[in-house]
Image: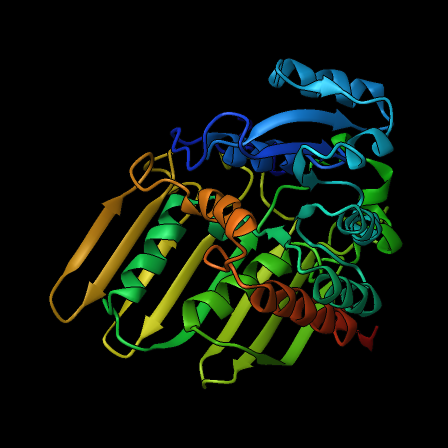
Length: 365
């Protein structure tokens, strides 16, 4: 697992199968983003059987097969989609192409698990909403900064137990290292990646909705900018937004591609959750200058001030819940409404953002 490279960060957990071998067969289509490895790791640890992989790039397929020697390279996407044994397709293709892949997957009677962000336009989102309503199949999204981080999972459990009372505000920071020399061309082109709030901002909005228990929210203000990477004029290395939820909770988050080289991981992601009776701080990937392992959580309420070191102690229940949801037509992992609402709000934040830069000029995008 490459802690210095967020694009290839693929957490591994303990085996916790919810099905027997061969009961839930999956395939991978589209290897443009390294998150596909984290997605497959989580599903396999929950008992899924990885049968197929397909990508037009044979080098990507060869690398994937080295990691998962049990998988079979398919000759075409069609070979996978027409295999009646496959229950779910996981995909991490170019962001702007994720919707079209999902529509094809659902048209062939299979569930779809896509990397975030699932869409780059609101029109794509509406097509997905119609397709899930038509087919009854799942369109799941890998919001990894909550689902694949043990301290973030534990925070949700504490909130559910009432440890900090009613959630009033969520503050999130999602810094990333740009690693421009290793990025593909599409990473810098707005048409393909959708913009910073659409992309890594989706993690922040999803966790706000989840921790606050909100069903909907309004984007009050959002900004984007390019402070350091002017050689890529369509790239955005800074973004932030403020939201108010339907239950009164508020949110502020900042995302960026400005992680300095001295940090031992790809980003010092943090979340602070304020409640009526306490607060939680999550230090997801590192506790700087103290502990490189990450997964630290700090809890303060009327009873205690406490530090939890959670690496390897909580697990990742989402993946097993997703498998069982697909088999049982339930919504315990994440509701389809929540999945799509997080995507909708990040698209609105991106669409309505004000563009700022280091010359102190401000322009509506």
